[in-house]
Image (cartoon, rainbow, N blue to C red; front, side, top):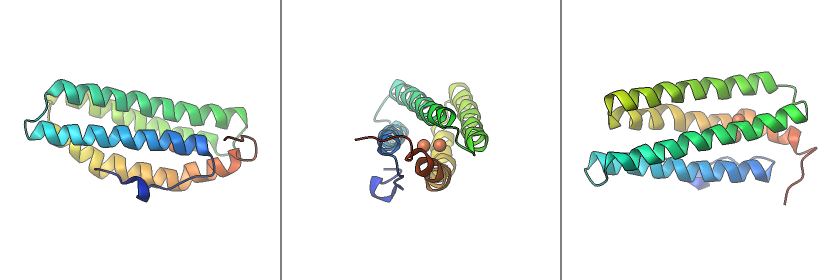
Length: 141
Ligand SMILES: [Fe+2]
Ligand SMILES: [Fe+2]
């Protein structure tokens, strides 16, 4: 397991927490698949499929937040959006590298040392402030 749900920060909007929770599940599945692939237990297509699921999920996650920030005029929208764009760009490069080199170590290393610490920090900071702001307008559950 790459990220334990118990350790993952919660924000003031349940829709965002649900999206984060799904993302952690997909990320953990991808991470397990990479480890299993390195041990020869699953084929490369399994990693490809989960990597694809993960990328699509990240895109949906970011779009969901961006739409709400735009709709309700969140003051730090450009900054939050910039951070999302930066990570999408980074993921794009990692995907290219994976398709070219097929090196599971690189993918594993990126998830462990870049993406996992980033998402925890991002949710603790930008998402937390954003959710606090949005909770004045959006009511869920
Ligand atoms: Fe988020
Ligand atoms: Fe975010």
